[in-house]
Length: 195
Image (cartoon, rainbow, N blue to C red; front, side):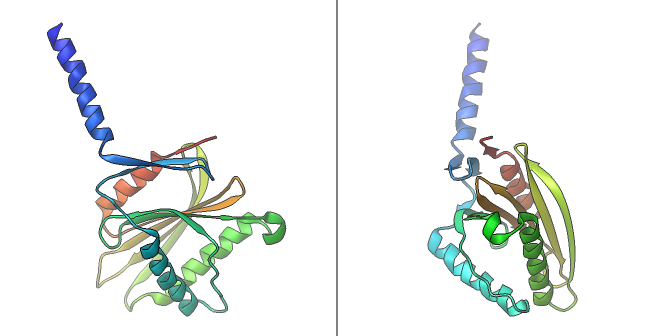
């Protein structure tokens, strides 16, 4: 009996210790809850805004006739190191004013592909794929871009998108380090959506 009590207490302590090593974030606009391990750095809104301006410049510089307007709201942005991160943004999407959501997503994919392709260093190649993926039983469109570079680590980016509650939801996972990338994807895949 003493051993049974000891085992139950040990399991409870271990579970409490594991739970305390992550922070839970809830985003009511889209009914999303995600638990982020504390070893990831949460990026504040000012730093994120600076990086958004930089990203906008890259897209505008490397695409033809694309004027980038960002009306998105960033829900979450975390990273480990310089190139291993997850970012989620939302923006209102009105199919009556803006047209088909599927066509919108295809335009975004083409713009991203062209921007990445134009920005590539010499001797780098780009590979893409598209698929559907479920996160907590919610189906997302997933667009993968992999940049194979000779002078640096390869960069893999996944762009998850779908419409939820009148919002266009974009979740971007990018990484150079495979192990950290796997952890980020695991965090995303264990997140929950209210259905």
